[in-house]
Length: 154
Image (cartoon, rainbow, N blue to C red; front, side, top):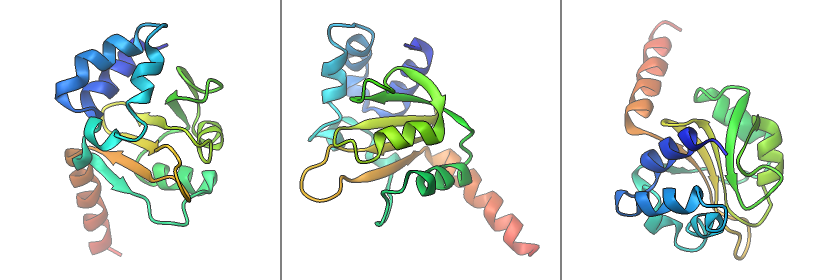
């Protein structure tokens, strides 16, 4: 477990009202599952929706999702918070994390840039689970500004 990264993620992407509780749960081996359960059915109550951008379907290809995240600044490595114990609490290659998370059926939060960019796959109900990128507003603005300035010279 990397407490520093997890604290940044909670402070960035979780609603303020539950941040302290989520950190307490994540940092406790006995209660970590409770924190991850907050990403199940009521994830929209617990995560900051203003940073969530739903990925249009089809969106179940790990390599395409990795490319999407890399377009937004993701590097080769990421950190995972996940129901999948193979990747939870680990720093690992982005594609490997996505291959384990996509289609797993339970939530995963793949953190590319701890206070700016992440991938979230919600719990699967009927059909494919909702999939999102998380991008902070300032980061989105800078990304769009850079894209706009580059397009002027093309």
